[in-house]
Image (cartoon, rainbow, N blue to C red; front, side, top):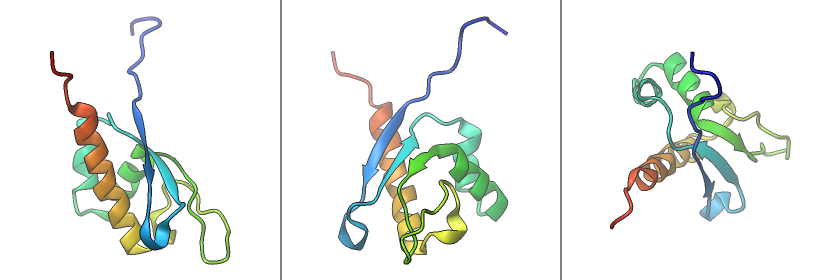
Length: 101
């Protein structure tokens, strides 16, 4: 192991609109390739582990106003979860763009 060197963690904040206006999530935009594969694997356990790896934090609450733990997909409506993953993909794509010289 090389002392003092760590992989940098890049993040982006996603701000939702529509019926989820005001909700935000901070997601990792440079996860491992394995995490990306797990997210799209179709396997529930792998998906949940990947989601926990990419979600740094979110401010999601349930219908009673109680906080939903970050990365707990079983407590998030399907449409919000799908939007989170879609917007995460966009954020990853934007983060991968190289500056033009």
